[in-house]
Length: 206
Image 1 (cartoon, rainbow, N blue to C red):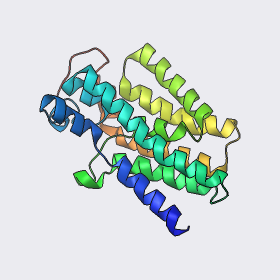
Image 2: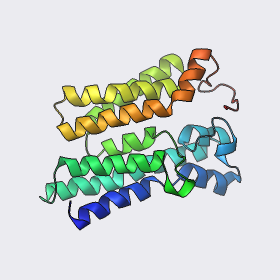
Image 3: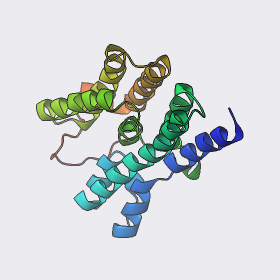
């Protein structure tokens, strides 16, 4: 990679690492989402902690921080200054930034919104299929965690069926694996029947 490409990947990580859920919740409510609900800094727990406005702001910001660096990487490739592996590296870096943010001691969110964000300028159809799986799962189960896991599992299959590049498929497999691992506590609560549903009461998850 050239110096400019390495700088883009590093910037993608640092942008992805910005904990918007924590920032918006603190600015607008004075609360810390890490002390409520699941303790997560993502949009779902930000909404449970600070209300729908905070949740929507967090969701939008977490998506956008995935869109911006990958859109730049796509432009690099379109101008002949890189290949699909540069886009994949940038997308993975933004995703890892959210999941393991340097600003919070590498304790971040689960990466769902940022995953969808990196797909918008790069693999929009595969991302749309995964989002459709998410919506269907939410409608049928009302479990955000289950919907997120199913979306992650759907993504690499969709990318493969659509004939995506090896770089894109490997990145999607990576998103699927890490996102599923990040939902381990949710999986345990789903099996125990104690996971929160959309619109249900909020319990502190240990």
